[in-house]
Length: 124
Image (cartoon, rainbow, N blue to C red; front, top):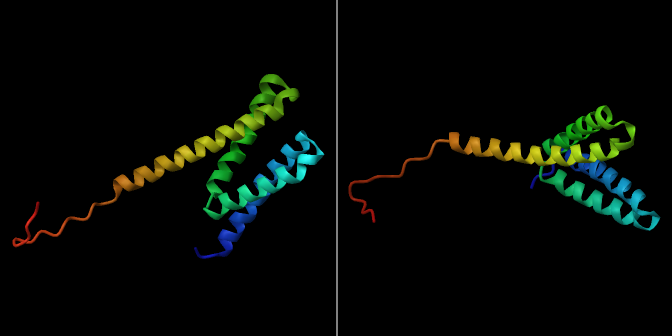
């Protein structure tokens, strides 16, 4: 795997994104869990960034914003964190689902190479 500036940016973006999630989870769990949750979030974020998860992070970001805004409009400020978290989960799920559908569509549109047919070639 070749390390490019874009790949380094993706890894740093992943560490920042999921590291922040780990930080927030650690704060809610208590001071003893803060370093553990932060480290796990940073490691997972680096892994996702390493395999090229920029679209995944974008879908989580959009889901977080939309989920938080929808909850703010429906339930008020008390439930915004729950709505944002639910929106992030749905955004991540939909982002992966859409990327899988796009990959399947690309594979269907590729031409299949024709097999080499020689008159002297015996086929089973």
